[in-house]
Amino acid sequence: MCTTDFCLCPAWVIAIAYLIGSIPFGWLMGKLVFGEDIRQSGSGNIGATNALRRFGTGAGIIVLLLDLGKGLLVMYLAGRYLEPQSLEYTLAAAFVILGHIYPIWLGFKGGKGVATAAGAFVMIAPLPLLIALLAFIITVVVSRYVSLGSIIAALTLLVSMGIYHLFRPMHYSMLILVALLVSLVIYKHKTNIKRLVRGEEHRITFSKKGSQ
Image 1 (tube, helix red, strand yellow):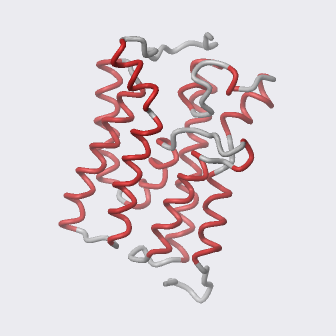
Image 2: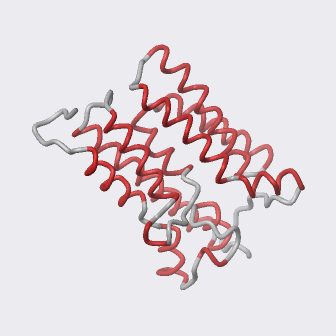
């Protein structure tokens, strides 16, 4: 369902959201600014955390903001041209996140989707996102494990979205998306979980230039 005379069919929604989501800002930062492939160092991930470790705090923050921006942009556009209580709106959120995780440009091997999902949920449900963000910050400050913070934040988002739905009902597909997203985030962190259990997970540090 559309909110203006301009209408996008589900296929176009999926294509546009996916292509925007698949822009690999972490990889581009490494190649264009530092002349390195971010996938060849650290965790091998193209996201902000690995950019921070490899290229320093400034680069990590820039990649974080750009990855957030992908989700924010897609859902801003979706809000202008689609009805929020529609399947198409949910598809836009789903595929911008999937684009980041499985970018066509890098052989479908991308990031973990946390930052892009956060950007999307700024537009979808800011209050549950804020609660999840607070859970993330507290976990990272206390433990200095970004991976653990991401997992805790995802689970917090799931619970807070369920409560939010009781007061501001959403399309059922959005709740399904959140449940699937949380499952995917945890799955993408499976190697981090193993390292956490073994006590081998890297703790976050802030520096001008990241280390290997």
